[in-house]
Length: 119
Length: 114
Image: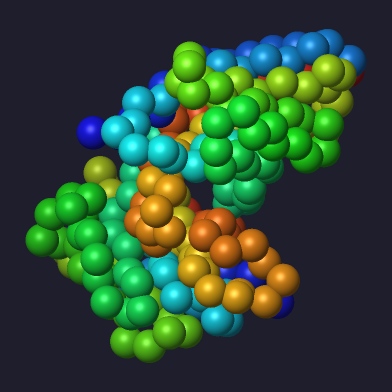
């Protein structure tokens, strides 16, 4: 399996612009997580989905952030409008509660992240 | 709520030195415990885990034992290598088959010098 795939790897944008981050989870996984990592706050969970349904979005910082999971193989995290304080590395992770192939269940597998810089 | 506390870094060691990174947790249930590692420029990857008290997780020479009495899950390695330089995260999740989030510590950066 190719693992969790995130795009783009790097994004540089100007304040006020819309930013869309994308994630393709591991095939067969039924849970997906979005995290944000900064030096100041460490790793923070933003939102997670189970079977494409948002379960807990209490970590989403404000209304400028939104996340969708239209199907089991794709999710987006959107920031509109973006602000310099949104600059961070955003990670997507997925996991499985079932017989997810050879990968252990209930283990989160992370993508390589998207480094976002808002100028 | 549940939480994880791990020692602050950075930790700098010479090659072949002994490593300990302390991790303690607070949880109301019976969590599973994990150590994840993040190499420069990469996402986190699972290093080892333990799902119940007295379990020992091990991988790549690293070990950690789930100590319920001291609510700890300290990471150890007998002889570190330069390639072990990374950030290490202790984490917990509720055990009841939940797909819920992992609660991470703040991470400990390890630098190993030749």
